[in-house]
Length: 440
Image (cartoon, rainbow, N blue to C red; front, side, top):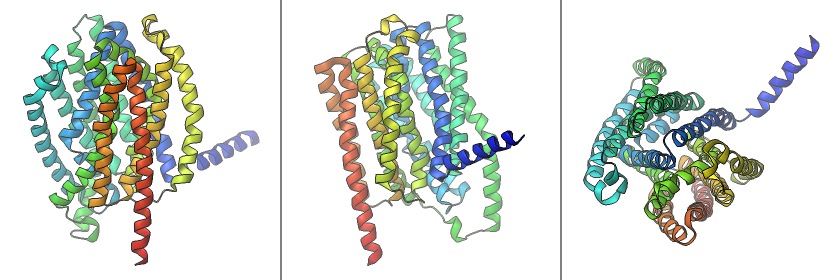
């Protein structure tokens, strides 16, 4: 009995230490969810590779990355702005939800219309598979609906719970691929299935969303026109969304441009090979995706000690990345098949690139979260954006032409390293200026 009590006390002490910081607790819980997301991502790609082939795996990887990237342009990061405004607790939920919703509807329509007009000039994928534009458009729309609801839950700091809904659609998608393959259905239907699964996950979010909606309604009635419920103007919303847009598009381009250039210079089969190894090394990248989910909104109300937190992050990264390296080299041929042998140096480059991306994501989230929108702030984001789009594109073209498939992660790693140095300098510079202004 006493031993059980002591064990219980030890567990409580460990739990308190582990979750002693608000951000640390949110990060750990959210990353725990993302570990299962990573496993489902791997399972999805393995099932596609085994059931449909390496080329189809390349098409799916290209399609999903491209669709997620286009979503950032069509939504213009209004959902991320919605999250930040809810976290700060200074605006009426219903008002900003409808305001962002109308703008998202407009930007999505314009974005998809522009994409339709230029797709034959830019995306060879559509030229080869004409039905894929329809699948891509439906995916962007379904992902927009899902992300708008997801952003509200994040704004209420339900980071782990909101991320868990990703498990819903990913689980359904894996099951659906199995069924489609067993029934001998063509691969393009799998891409339409993806959107259906995302919409189901969005519907499953509605009960939690409705609770927050009713709570916001009661608060609004009791505290009408108070300081805590300011009216958000469209101009202010656009400024905030534009700043977050530069951050997120720059970040997500780092996982899209390499696939695009690989397909242009090599083939979908090579994209499939690359994606198989990336599916395991993405375990590292997943934490990079967790930082914007948690750190960015938390940085709006917190002050992070950069040197101390980065030191802890690097100590965590080194052994974790080494383990991912050796596990990936062993497991990819085992799960995907013997045709995927010989990827050690590709894995090594992917691991190093993903580790640097992790550091960049942390720095980027802090910079975006703790600074207000200004001309200098937008200048920093603009430089970072150009490095991600132009610098990464040029570097990928050059290194892939020179070294083949391994050139992609090397190019991304170099660009991200430069971005980390640039952002660290920007964070320090902005903090010094804020201190000087306070003294004045």
